[in-house]
Length: 221
Figure 1 (tube, rainbow, N blue to C red):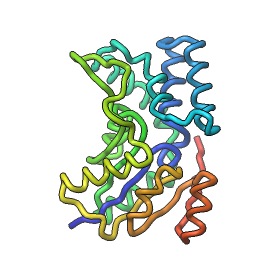
Figure 2: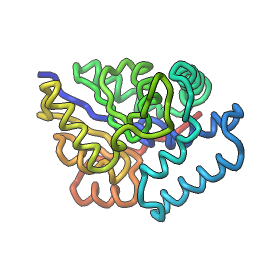
Figure 3: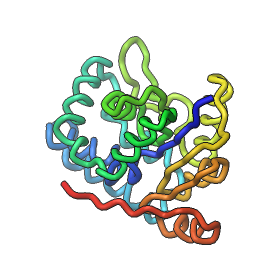
């Protein structure tokens, strides 16, 4: 059985939060207005400061602009966003790591809080078959602006991963995991080789206490 390598995306493979970068892109395209964009940035700030405790609420507010949009239209927007903007944010070291693990015969799995259309595009670009991300509600071929189920965050990350492992008959024996945020802890601690990347303050302390490897990727545009 092939070994698994689990990667978070935001601040692990790319610099920053993919959803915030996406919102900046659609603002510049005129899809959302300045006041809506400013409110979303305030929500992100409150969340990062620990004042807004419910990340699902923050995400759904940020996704209101999707309501009523056709699937194909959003796919075109995501493709343009990726080609013109998101590709610039990859950490070179992360891409080299993914390539090395693939060459050594391991299966790569992306597990991310970010929305599925963005993670699907990243996975396709990097030649990664498996990914778990926050699903968006679609009715009659159009997005509703709501999240389908729960966001892939905290305990939901490990729960989605466990379901994935069971359905695909995969094992975590001699597995690897890379993450940057304390919300990645549940996945990191069940793998054989937990590695933290550009960790937040809380995860950094936890990694030091447990003797985990810590990597610091440097972004260069």
